[in-house]
Length: 137
Image (cartoon, rainbow, N blue to C red; front, side, top):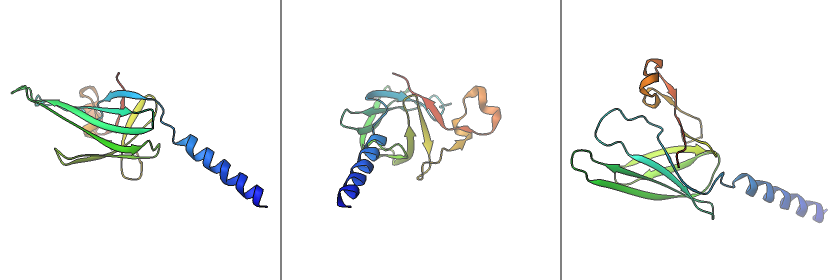
């Protein structure tokens, strides 16, 4: 009975670690919220390390002064359900989940959000759009 229980625990451990493997390694840029103003919308990115650590960051260039603002934060190990990005400079918090091709803006529970802020200029008449972005390399 102990052997069966040990084997079951081992299998569960293997399955849970396999599910949390990041879908890629390296840096990918994304743009979930469409920028309409000329003030310098931040260019966000996610950087997934081989260790499974996930970093979120942004680069923002003020178009009037040319001043560049950057920030990067460690969000911990990859979690396929939801990840929290908290930036201190602008007191900004957002939740996302991502796969190999897209990133999605979610709530704290991992539910994908819809908002008019996520619509492109071509979709602005829709009212609300899914908050998602393809990754750019």
